Image 1 (cartoon, rainbow, N blue to C red):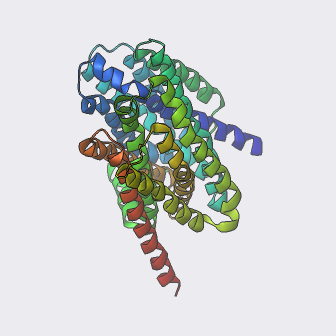
Image 2 (cartoon, rainbow, N blue to C red):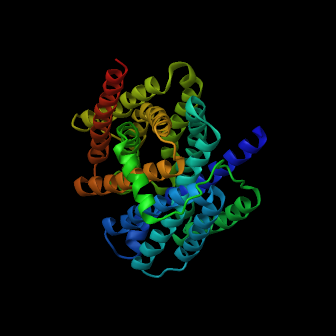
Image 3 (cartoon, rainbow, N blue to C red):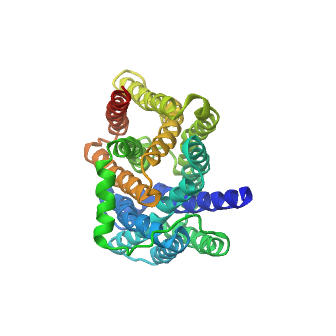
Length: 398
């Protein structure tokens, strides 16, 4: 049984990593795509934000469907859509078709996170669930490191941006074959009553009325909001404004990713002793302090370089690991429908992520300021939400 769980956990890691990499490998090419199609940065970024929106909207269907029909068949359908759209991205000849293909690709990729985390919740519970979510997040963290390094290496060697989609297409085909052969069903008890639109809506209404679930889901999503905004907008600041060679971009991003991996390892070792709540609040505090320092240095006489910024961000990488693993596990503790709950969390994170990208783009002046301000705002709001949850629970216990 333990071997089977480890195999399924490995498949979840690979699936989410490849689907995430479809964005991470792609971000270093955004300036080149903008020039290739002769469009503005905001239009080029639509290929990212609409991909995220496609993933969030489709995830709302994947979650309930997997609760009724099982994780395995719905996962296979999603990855098939993802693979076909990835192949389509290789052959588009205008920005509109690329945006449409990326939207469809996102609709397929939505199955990975929703069903992947539901599978983890099927197999584990409580602190063990938080520990394994941290383990999965640690493995997935290599995607933001490997993706930009691979993407920037391909682009810097003179290959066109669509070569990146050829890589994703090949990986998606291999992934589908492995899932078809080795993925086993993890849901113990499927729903036997008929699935209908009103039933799905009722499930989501119940989740939104569950204040504790919603609170932890919002903390998770607020963190993802500024993380994704940074990932998408950093290439324009580092490469365009600070003149960082495109080939070096991925290696700088790897600094932040390594700190995130360290954070996940620390979280795995401490969460069972310290508890999810303590690890979560420490993570929230670590998230915004480095960005306060960056904003202060920006308005001082210190010259900020990409390397200096990434080094200052090292503590926030640890904070991200503490925050997302424990907030998601805490949210899962508050609901019985893990598929629907996972879908709702992924929906929130993607909508917040797309909105964060848009906000930073609107207020960006080519410097690091807009990117640094968002984590401060999001983390303060998340701390307020956590404080409300803490005192609400304490009041209920009295």
